[in-house]
Picture 1 (tube, rainbow, N blue to C red):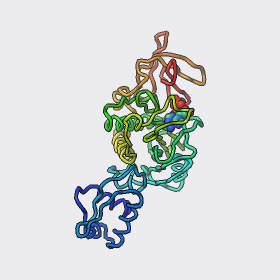
Picture 2 (picture 1 turned 90 degrees about the horizontal axis):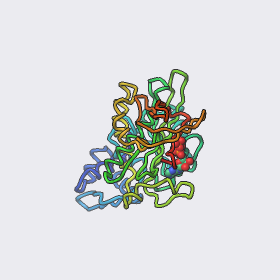
Picture 3 (picture 1 turned 90 degrees about the vertical axis):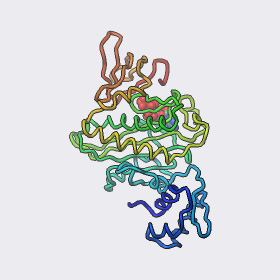
Picture 4 (picture 1 turned 60 degrees about the horizontal axis):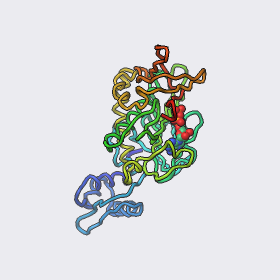
Length: 331
Ligand code: ATP
């Protein structure tokens, strides 16, 4: 799927501070004046505030938080991550969509994005709330050539990518990662990551990394209101979701390139540990084989959580079936 005409026109008018003439757009895109005009009308109907001045052309004055395939693709800067976007106004689960599209041959790096999920998923069958018009629900499809035992580290790369974007845009926010897959702001969850893999014992068919982010929610259901927050609640203003999606793809593409060279997270330990909320804190490790407590020290090169035990020994906790909690609550 090539970048659409709509996305091209958006890109042109967004990148110019002045009017862009209809003629210029026709020539650049190889389409008629009427076709340009029709796209501009569509964009205006979607909520873009585009000024049209005779003899001057079109100028983008402002736009609300619009999430659409064209909006995202017109802003994507990456080589492969999120280069192709499959947008859904509403879907049950973007992870399920990405898995289905993977079977249909969807390319490495394709991204499914939905404005709303009706059956968003957390780990081990838990639910994830993704209300319309406020949250980000997206799933990135990867077709790695490395062995399946490395795949769990991709969750950590995604968590760091999300944390870096939030930290970069809002340096005043206290951003943390709760090992392995949650991103927190002010100790409340703003993002959950669910990585799913289809693999043989020594061969990965594909990996889907699902990311749910609370962006513009002003309230939450009673089930999660004590542990959740949104970027808007923390920042105080409406936030542009497409900018966040595009930023995450940028970071993830870069980090994936580094990861693919070594196939471990040694290059990221420092940065991950810098965000790790559990670091130096007492944690409860909810291992199906038996619960225990210790002090989290950081992650190792495999992305496992290093937990110092009361007897002085250490436990390397692999994510898989294990959850980590704070000694008194969620963190
Ligand atoms: P683990 O530590 O095992 O990952 P978790 O509670 O963080 O446990 P996840 O699978 O990551 O589990 O996320 C699912 C949980 O997140 C749900 O059970 C619910 O408590 C909470 N949740 C659901 N929707 C949201 C949301 N939009 N924002 C914050 N938290 C949510």
